[in-house]
Length: 91
Image (tube, rainbow, N blue to C red; front, side):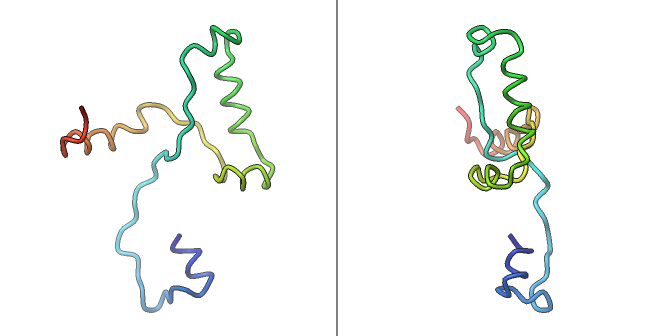
């Protein structure tokens, strides 16, 4: 976002400086039902994930809108889960 605003001339990098950056995290995940392999055959979930992650077409990626899609796992959300627990946001 910062780089885009600098490129658009909306932010002057000589005036505004970055003091902290959020560490990378998996956002906007796509989840599938746990029974898809049972319904569509062994390995279906893995093949679906590979098909999505392998998308290279810029028009498709723009429609999603992610560039590129990356695989994610439950563990990728551990830091967010820990903060939510500390803030008593989970039931």
